[in-house]
Image 1 (tube, rainbow, N blue to C red):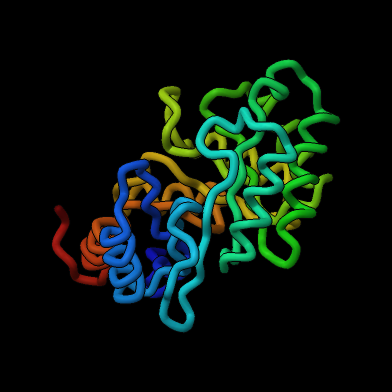
Image 2 (image 1 turned 90 degrees about the vertical axis):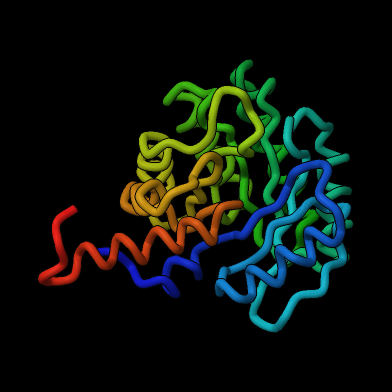
Amino acid sequence: MVPDRAHLAALIDHTLLTPEATGAQVRDLVTEAAALGTYSVCVSPSQLPLTVPAGLRVVTVCGFPSGAHPAVVKAAEAADAVAKGAQEVDMVVNLGLVREGRWGDVEADVRAVREACGPAGLKVIIESAVLSDEEIVACCRAAQAAGADFVKTSTGFHPAGGASTHAVRLMRRVVGERLGVKASGGIRTAQAALAMLDAGASRLGLSASAAVLDGLAQLSSRTRPGAPTP
């Protein structure tokens, strides 16, 4: 079954994280997000505080995009963002620690940000395209142990690539229903978005939200009884 437009929109963090993004572009993002009915807007922390209409949430990033920041710096960045109105923070794990298998330190990195976030939600970006399945599993377990609310596939900035259905499926298998799974990075069509949801994603990070939602309407028309076969 193809979900309706409003249902899919309500799962989207409408995202603009390019370093050159201007305040005017971010305001346009907010206007578009409100018109589309997305769950939130996701912007760089330097764009905070951000005025949004009622019902639209504000998400930001932390330790972005490399993750190679001291935990104390990530924690300070997260605390500042929450003080400026961020309702969710998407942090990047320290991939060097991951590659060294220092899982206690990975957990401590996440826990420092979790504590700094206070009531705000925390998503942990594991950059799944860079990792082996074993590393994905261990990252998800560390994030869960540290109190994260979501695990997230990708920043969308790593040359190794973005989200994959394989990674989403594996992440969902590890965290079960205890955590959310956010698929982000390179999702530009309705078909790709639906594949991520089928694999177990409960949130989508999209910059091409309008195109994805428009594509959903086309898919829905093809699945109606009596619709012509393409």
